[in-house]
Image (cartoon, rainbow, N blue to C red):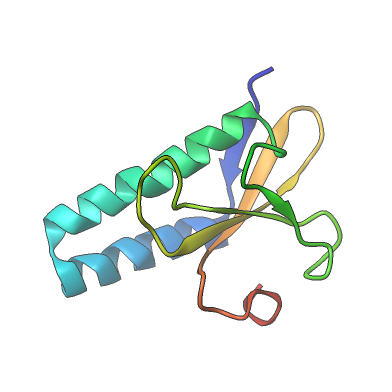
Length: 106
């Protein structure tokens, strides 16, 4: 089964802000590289919510899961925060930096 990934409004806003900050701090080339890193993490979720590296974080909110974007040899400092919405949908709620207090910033 291939899961369908839906980005919520806050996740879309996070994505734009991450790439804007990366462009200002490290340049357009690095921003494009990081966009691919985030995209690959999102694409990995098409295999389902319990892929290797995914962690259930019920203490944030029941049913919340996270997946770090640093995977498959790629570097990154963000988590994909998501939940399953039944019928083969995964809703991406936020893209948060791994140094953040996740429960407070969710």
